[in-house]
Image 1 (cartoon, rainbow, N blue to C red):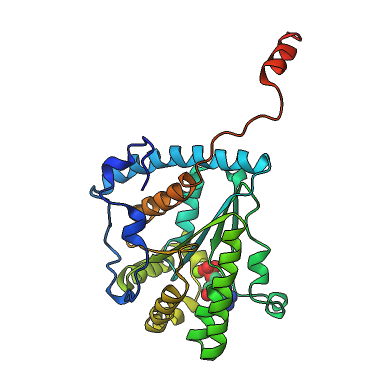
Image 2: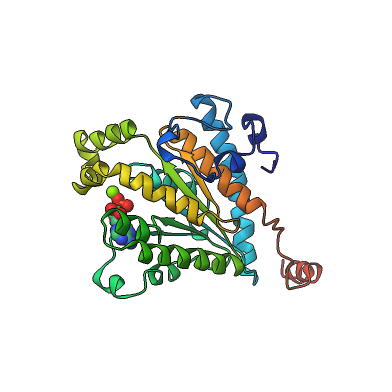
Length: 290
Ligand code: AMP
Ligand code: MG
C-alpha cells in the first residue's frame, strides 16, 4: 500500500491488497464476513478515514481524467461482484460518490435481454469498457455469465471452461490496452444476508430493492459458493486480480474498496499534464486584455 499523506497509513495495519487478494484454494465458506482485515480501528474511526481517502481519491481521479483529456490511454475498471445484498450499490454510492461523476462510467448488468443473448456474452461488457481517463464500474459483470449458467446447469463443464478461458484472455487484452482491472467480491454471511433481505421486506422504502428470486438464489448459496471459488481460482491473475472483501460491516467494505481503488490509481503515478501551449505567453496575452 502506498501512503499519500492522507492519514490512512495510521489506521491501516498492513497492505490491504495483500490481505484481501484471493488466495489459491480459498474456501469461501471459511471467510469471516464480519472481519475487518488490516483496519485496526473501530467503526467510529471509519468515517474520518473514509473522508480522508475520499479527498485522495478525488485528486487521483482528477489526474486520471486530465490524463485522458490530453491523449493518455490509462483507465481503471472496478468489477463488483457479490451475492444479493452484498452491498454493490452501497460501494457505488459511498465510494464512487466521493469523486467527480464526470469521470465515472457506471454500468449495471442484469439478466441479458433477448438481443444480448443473441450476441457473444462479452459483447455487452466490451461496449461498456471505460474510455481513457475514466473509472469504469461494473455492478455485476461477465462473471454472471459463468456463475449463473453453472448454478442453473445451463452450460456443461466444457462450455464453462471455455468461457473462463475467454474471460482471462479478454481481461489480459483490456489490461494491455491501458486499463487497470480491479475485481472485488463483496462477501456477506448467510445471517447478514438474511437480515438485509428481511429489511427489504419489512421497510416499505426498501421494497423496490427486493426481488422474489432473491430467496431462490439464497437457497442455492452452496452452489454459488462453489461457483465463486472456481471463478476466483481460475481467473485471479496478476493483471486482473480478485480481492475478497468481507462485507458484513458496510463501513469496512467501503473503506477497503476505497483503498483498493486508491492504490490502483496511485500506481499510475499520474502527474498533471504538460500544457500544449506556452503558459508565460498566455499569461501575458490574458493580462493584456485586463
Ligand atoms: P440486481 O443486481 O439485483 O439488479 O440483479 C440482477 C440480476 O441479473 C441478478 O439476479 C443476476 O444474477 C442477473 N444477471 C446479471 N447478468 C446475468 C447473466 N449474464 N446471466 C444471467 N443472469 C444475469
Ligand atoms: Mg437485486
